[in-house]
Image (cartoon, rainbow, N blue to C red):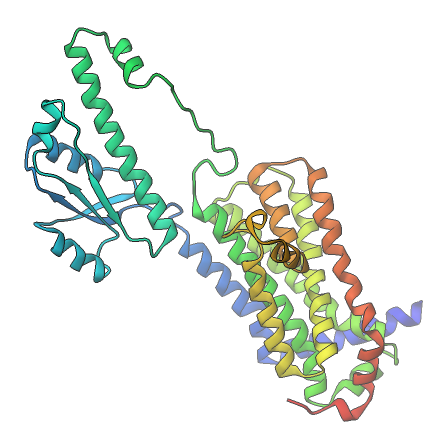
Length: 392
């Protein structure tokens, strides 16, 4: 056992030397991850979507229509960017990408209201962006409904009802909504941390593949195994542990940016998150070892590893719920540790769920650690047989 640890430490020291002297190592393990964390922190600093530009076509030009236009412009997600004279102008602005929606207030708007006639307000919203579509639709609809309720209240009170009675007539059922996980509806609390985790995942995979693949590419694999005393296990652990330690430190930097700079809530257990991110890093290292061992080619390994990593976001359920996917796609989402850690992060950071709910995803991530054991004979073969060396 002493000899095993001695050999592992020898490889560990050798790998640290490579990290110090090779610029690509420094870029993959320090420079690019930190830059990416800072980028997403700044990108989502504003948090919520607001002030989306719209054009208002007021065909009535009366006090009531002007009041409605003003109310729409004061909605949180709306910026009254243009007052237009006709729909052709609005269509041109939308085609040019200068506005996200058009609100049309029809002629005879005020007279129809005072004459107890039903009138209408039309909103034309670009559907090219689902988030923009949903936000504008909600804000404009809420504003118009509030405006209509105000008019109805005024009429009922003029007819002799008290304010309480009039409100009961206008709104006989009061609806109350409680958002329990992200009450601020803040993108910075939700997407910024997830994108940072994605960057941590990508650089973990690429660095691990590069660390092993460069030994094959530059025909130094024999020296690597010899440093580990001929033990493939000691050699592999000595090579991957420095990456594990560095990525763990980067994860702490990431958490500081998430919870201090971005201000994301931490409603659950930090220690569960810490255990989760450690398994997250190790599981993706295991996957990276599996990929480069099976392929035995640095360039192809980096390509496949990068592609696999990027797919994890698609199958995580963040943009399209896993429960709404086809069964085969739901099954495919299980082959990404990112899916499980995302569940842990949302439970602990956003929901404040009891730690027991994170045990299952923690176990699922731990299963990926067996992958290198399945290809250990293959790794020994390609690392000790020179015919596998020197390939791009």
